[in-house]
Image 1 (cartoon, helix red, strand yellow):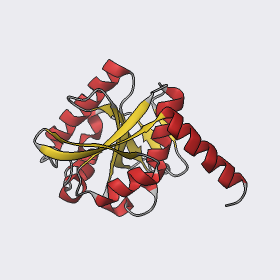
Image 2 (cartoon, rainbow, N blue to C red):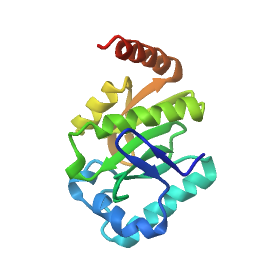
Image 3 (spheres, rainbow, N blue to C red):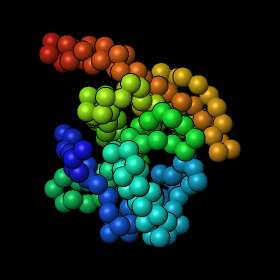
Length: 185
């Protein structure tokens, strides 16, 4: 899989150890990471370890998380991707962006792009979004991107809701979206 992609407004690229300081701006922010286990990174070393784990996932599965960058400046503003979660066989879609980028539709843009990538390029049969039930914004985003509640469970001592979409469901929803956009609706 290629090392970088462009969405309409963002650049996605593989993370390197040199990104740890910049990534800490996102992963160290308590408001960004309040629903993530185990919580925010406390220093650059923890962000570097996060990047090492992301890159190990890439080595093992051939896909994973990318850094999310502003396309003109190249500044890292978060991360996103498709990845396995410890103790689960399913592939999870996830993202985290710095607060200055919230409520601009970037989460929807990333999620839709990652679903397309997962189903069309990786030939996944289903994708899940594992979300803290208190994270209303992420739950709305999952529903907006055609994921449906699949199950509630406890993961690493934390309550979670798993949303899911299967490839056939996503294909049907995508055909409808393409038809609507070609009709100008």
